[in-house]
Image (cartoon, rainbow, N blue to C red; front, side, top):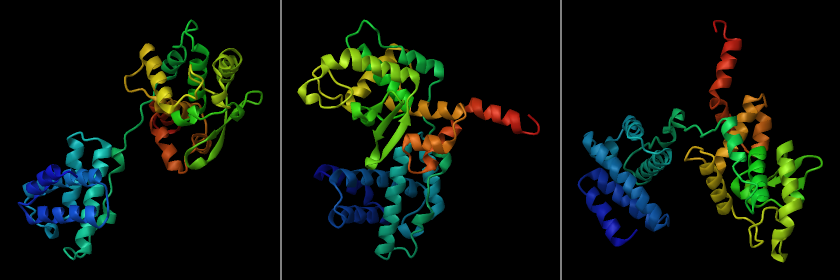
Length: 312
């Protein structure tokens, strides 16, 4: 935190006992905990807003602070349409402040473990329907130099649900097009095997036969997707290419590579795939992470309700 920034935060907090506790806490983070200046500054900004909220609610000291007021503040942030990441960061800052207050004897019980962000605040991922995804997959033009590469890349992303970094890291040896699967190395160097459908196999075969041999250089190694200079595509280049074709196909402005991952999972589940299989293909450690996709497909939920509810 620069001197000017720190001074701004400190001066705005000195007006109350609670504010002075926040200042002491920020000193603790910088000196004792060794957190970076940017992290301390972010906590300072969040806690300055929280201290102002407490002052408006006639709470002057940390000892007067009830957990009900913390929950009220988090709900207030939601009503102000703050992002989920902002609300979570504010919650972390408040939890740490309460733990500091307990550590220094200002309060007897911090109650931090009981504070949680309501699950209803979890944002559902952006998902496109099958017709929209089909338009995206057809967006590359056969007249373009890198048509075969870009077509294969898009087909692989939708067929497997892999991340941008994962598709960029694929090697030719990771593919078995005869059997129809790809071996992917994901987070934590965990390997998973994902089946490939016919369109992805055909597009990848065309790329390997027509374009990759002309792009390959000694430095290309065994990497599958190559740039015009023969270097492996980076995840940023994959991201830019997906954005380019999404714009061309008239897709939602917020579509990203990860949107195709969401589409992969949602379309599998809507087609009848079981949750555990989708979890394995996505590489999720916790099935709870995969379960979010069961809430996305409203059409499937309506069909289930119609089939099984006694009064459809």
